[in-house]
Image (cartoon, rainbow, N blue to C red; front, side, top):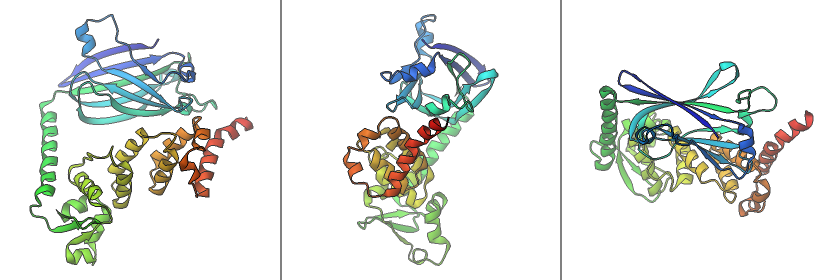
Length: 340
């Protein structure tokens, strides 16, 4: 049974919620392949009012051997917060894992915070052991909830600014360039906005290019994808990222939109299965999606390799380099173990 130490303090207009989550015999928990999720328990030592006002935490274990650990939190209320995750080490040392700056979090909706790897938590070569001397894993969460009027107004201002800029895309007001989809659909857009968001689009207007003289850009993207890319450029939002992540990843790579690329990698990682692992790996390799490639290789290595070799995706693999990459990744730890 895990233990929770929950404290709160007020600094100015900010309530700082600090949670120490200690999970004993953590490696034994990971070795239990039937365990796919682990959550904090609601304490019975507090009134229901206090319980309901507290953050909840959970871990999800992925891979056949639970080699990937995703960490989530849930807020009981809609808040504007900054989140910090720290791992507690031996000799009272700490290491920050994730710091996410202030953003709006909706009530009672699990929020992804971080991904940990089993090999990093307890690497048997002794170089980087994240467990305490008694074998427990201790994570420190800090949720800084702000009631600062200035910060709230700033957040409202940013949201309003985003909406106002997005409206420029919808109404075409003061547009100075036309962008055409593969099918010929036209969008009235703005050089300043495009150039500030994409180095590729900026290059169209910096030199004596055809686009510079015609004020028209021919995009290789189909209308649905181009519309989503432009929505992201103008609003920093990608409403269809979970619907068409493969197409948007290619588009983000083409126009060098790194944040959109990251959103696509996260969406594709969530959809990862035995049947689509090879296609996902090929997609990640094609578009230099390094995080997605790493996570997919981890997924394949975690006891899924034999199953994946029986899929249609594996049967269609023609790249020797890709097969070599998978083989070397899977065999790496086995080779190290043999040497030891």
